[in-house]
Figure (cartoon, rainbow, N blue to C red):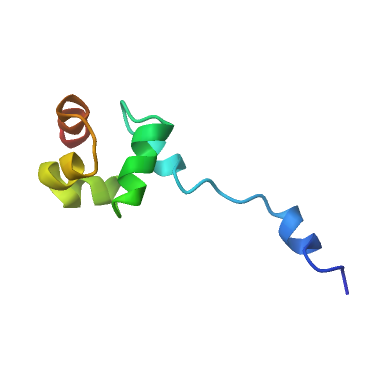
Length: 68
């Protein structure tokens, strides 16, 4: 049996912000704001709408880009 934690080290963790950072105009800070607000996927951005994105602390300009 391998030592504890060895199997975990072999599999790199996927960055939970990566999908959000793939959106136009979204860097790490904006992705973190969205993620912290419960918006965790690109589909979640559309589902959340402009008010929820603004409540997350994302600027109106970026919000419009995301919802375009």
